[in-house]
Image (cartoon, rainbow, N blue to C red; front, side, top):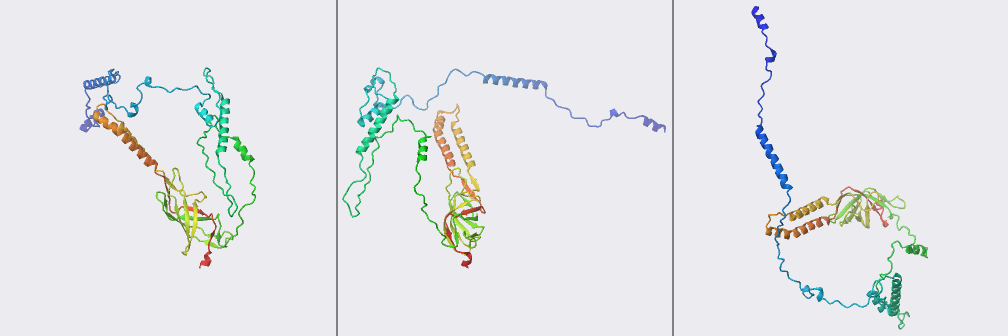
Length: 407
C-alpha cells in the first residue's frame, strides 16, 4: 500500500508533455545577399531612368536616298517654256471694261447687236453698279429673244391640198440654244418660291366633271372580286441569294364575293410564285408574287402576279435578314493588319528592304481596300422559313367555277 501511494504522489507535470511534433526549421535568405540584390535593382532603375530622360543627340544623320535625285529628266512639255519670267512676253491688254463680267458681257452685247456702255475712266477706282448690271443683262436677254424670233421658222407651211384637204404639218426646227447663256447677274432662285404656291391656288378647276369609266356588272356569279384577301402559308422556304420558285398553300376557303355561298378556292389549293433575288442595302422584306393557282382536283388557272403580304397587309415578307456584318468586320480587320504590316519600319533595315517595303505598301493598301469593297457590295440575305403565314391580295377580278359543279 505504501508503494502505491508513492507512485500516485509522483505525478507528471503537464507543462513537460509535448502534444505536437517539433516544426521544421525555417531557412531564411542571407541578409547580405538580399541587400546586394536590392542595391543592384535600384541602380538599374536609376540607370534606365537617366537613359530614358537623356536629351537626343544634336547630330542628324542624313538618310540615304533610294532614288537618284541629282539628275532629273525634264519633261518635253516644259522644254518649250521660258526659263524665267523675264523671257516671257505678256499679252497686251486693252482698256478696263465696265462691270464684273468684263469681256463676257461685252461679247454678248456685240453678238446681240447692242451698243456697249461707255467705259468708265480708268482713273477712277473700280466700283460695281448693280443697277447698271441688271439693265445690261435685261437688254441682252430681250435682244436674244428677238433674234431667236427672227431666225426661227414657222411650225406649218402651206402646200398643195391633197385629197383630205388639210395642210401638211412639219416638225419645227430645233432652236440652237448654245449661244444662250444663263444670266449670272440674275438673283438666285428661291426654293421657297411663293409664286408657285399662288399659281397652284389660282389654277382653274378641271372642266371635266364625269368619270370616263362606266359601271361594270359581274360576268359570272362565281367571281372573286378585287380586294379579296386569300390566307396561305409557305410550303417551301425562301433564300434571296439565288432566284427561284416558291410554293404556298391556301389555309382558309374562299367564297364568291357577291353572295358568299359558292366555294371557289378550297382549303389546300396551292399557289406557285417567284421572288425577287435582287436585294438593296438595308432591305428587310422579300418581294414575292404569285402566278398560278392549282386546285386539289388538278385544275389550275394563271393569275396576274398577285403580291404577297404579311398578316397585317404590309407588302413583302419579313423573317430573317443577314447583313453579313461579321464578314465585313473580318475584311476591315484584315485590311488593317495589311496596312500596319506595310507601315512597319526599323532602323536596322537595309536599303533593299526599305525599297521592297515602300513598293509593297501601295499594293497591300489596294488589296485591303478591294477586300473591304467586296464585303460591302455583298447584298443582304433574306430568309423566309417554311410555314410562314402570309396573305395574297387580289387586285383584278378572277372568274372561277364552283367546286360542286366540278364533281
